[in-house]
Image 1 (spheres, rainbow, N blue to C red):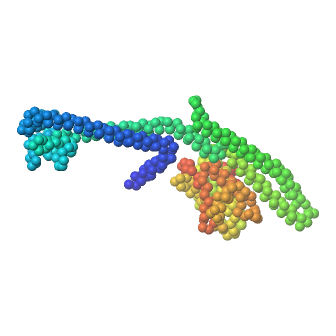
Image 2: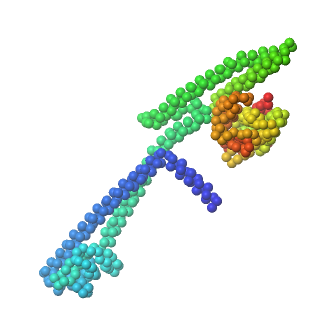
Length: 480
């Protein structure tokens, strides 16, 4: 039973996935239309055949009754019982019955009617003694007896059953043809739509150079027009994004150079011996603001570099726990000096990607916790395996972030402190989101009760690495 439930869930998931396909739904609509058409046609055909058979039976029965009435006229009614018995024994497809007014059967196997003379259905026994239902016509003889001539309805009912069976088979064949045609003609459409979907996903991951593949030779159709329109749009988007990144990078570089020279001049000015304490403090404050501005430009350049990279299908295999351990060792002295604690709970987990970017992402998360938590707080870094992929979590017990603001803080330059009284440019979590996207990871911001828990859920990437397999030490940042 435990093995049956996953199978049923997979079957249900497959059914839902198939039903979302337009081709499958169109094929289903076609099948329903075909079945309804065959059903209506079958009902009308069956009714026409039934009426035709009824008229044929009635015509044959009336003819046989007229023949018996002619014999009564020629030979008299006294010979009628013998005639009925003789025709019954010959069995020409008819059944007969001659019944007196008192209900006595004088000949044949059909009983007397119940009601007025005319058409009726009489239950009796056929030629081999089996119970049958007959369509019979009854008339009065000159002596007042009841003379009935009937035909077995079993043959007619059997013919109607054959007609119904043929209609059912024709409907099933029509439905199968519709399904086969839908699959045959839909596969090409599904492949082209899947190519468009894959292109959209790759563009969302940062590969702005991919385009919808052309369908090939043949007359262009609506999907070709759609693919062409998407490619034109992607060309325009790619050009705008490249232009924006180039402008951002150029501005950051152009401003960084004079700011760096200004910083060097301030440092030389601070070292001057004849500088008063008041002026030295003012220059130190300006120097600090300048350093913060330079860090902002560095973050801008780094964010543009990360977002400008295309996602690599393959990466360096490394141990995520070892990366977390090295980054935590680099930041632990600064956090302890500031009155905070840094805890690490890491299990060896294999990951394929860029260890330097992962280290920078973790450093940004720790710095974010250091900047936004009060003295005495604890920042906990956890690396744990999971069936769906490794998980890296940085949690603190600080003030946290309101649920409705957690998505907004991932945007560049967004800051919870609207007055911008705290240090930083609002790019820390943007860098984290960019690195997570490059590794196809999912970024989750949750309530740590109290505090904030930021989890980077990586996709499954293979087996665990050996304990000694670590990347180069130069790939890890150091605390400032």
